[in-house]
Every structure is written in structure tokens, then in C-alpha cells.
Length: 84
Image (cartoon, rainbow, N blue to C red; front, side, top):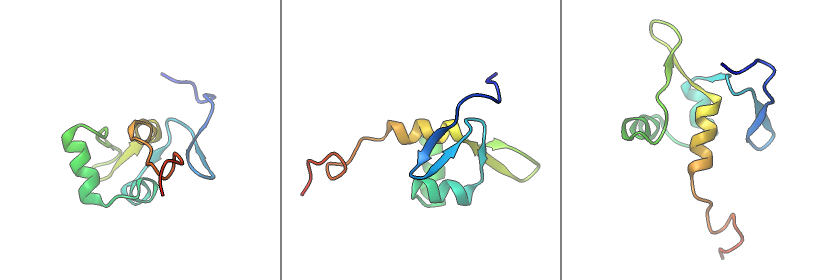
């Protein structure tokens, strides 16, 4: 188990989170720039960790899971300076 004093890390520009922080679907959609259908499709394909149940009807994703997904994505040619 990680200590609550574990250093925070950036998930997107200007945002820093604790690895154990939880994100509900609207936040995941905003952070990943994807719709709910795509998010659940990625979970079904094993490309994104499934959410954890936080109550009888509510689920959330761990920040560290989202960071792993983001870091697994290839950089675009435009972002790497090799684009247009």
C-alpha cells in the first residue's frame, strides 16, 4: 500500500493529483478527451483499468490507472515536432 505522503504527479497540464485519488466518469471523460462509450470499450479491451466500485451504484477510476493509460499512448507527430 502506498503512503499518503507519496509524491503527487501531473495528469494533464496544470493539474497534479495523488496516485490514490479517484475520478468519476465526467472527470475521466474530460481528462482523456474521450466519450463514455470509448472509455468503457477500452476497459472491455483491457487497454484501460476497470473502475472500482465506491458505492452500490457508483464507480471511479484511480488516478494512477489513468496516468498509466495516458503514458501508454504514442505521442502524435505534431506533438513531437515531426508534423506539419
